[in-house]
Length: 265
Image (cartoon, rainbow, N blue to C red):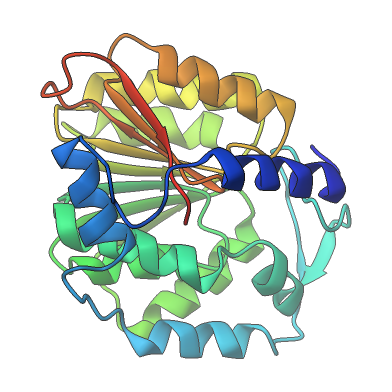
């Protein structure tokens, strides 16, 4: 993984070269709509206040969990025991991005949502709240973290989430066998090149014209940057958006030629 100073330098380069986040001068109608409706919340979607109230409680939760980390590890701590508050601070996507994913799911209305990497379930809650009628399937590799996530779903009254505890390698093939299509997938775990490409390849047969894949921490390391580059180059991918901490993949045939945009967010 990149050192924090390297990541800061990369973010500065991205910010200088990225397309403005207001949509001015954007010639792609689809991307302009994404900027206006999803990034800038042109539809004025209001996400549930209870999710951020839950986060506030988790940030004060001193329970210590045994961590089974099957991926590239944490940028913050290599410890196999971490408190819920530590996880809430370092491993849970910030409010800004959780609410972005909420708006994404509200706007495009995916019926089948798959998440790789539940963590404490905050992002899962945003996705599930966006469409209570959607089926949300989430996979968490650490059993004790998964148990806390289940408690959080109960607190929020979310009944459309199915959580599988286990490694992605073991659980994902079984989950995909039972699905006919994946409308939205959020891949947030095992930040390494080969596993990331493997998840992408496994998801491809279940992706339609309207499917959306979201990859977390695409600039986490050289491995992740290479994975992001190779995914964008796949013939099935028609459009990709780089928001630095999140990468969005679209398959829409309306893009006759590949298009890639880095957009400030």
